[in-house]
Length: 86
Image 1 (cartoon, one colour):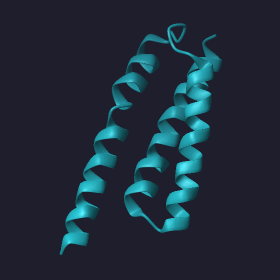
Image 2 (image 1 turned 180 degrees about the vertical axis):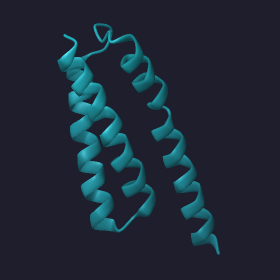
Image 3 (image 1 turned 120 degrees about the vertical axis):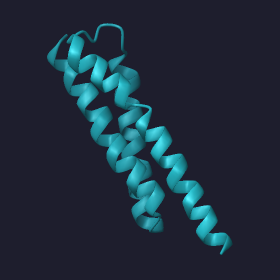
Image 4 (image 1 turned 45 degrees about the vertical axis):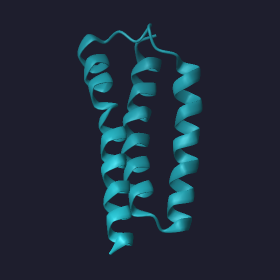
């Protein structure tokens, strides 16, 4: 039972932290202006997310796999927009 509660907490945390990128993606997509964001920061963050994803797969952790798969897509899209509109 306690393991189920911990898994739910992990999924909730993963959902919230992943969802926090959605407003940024929507704003950048709409405004087509990325000069205020750091390509270096998002690139380093993207590598970290990929490493977390590998770790989650290795540990068979659904919250980590879920969050980092979606976050990698969102951050990858931010990097794409940054490169496209620079």
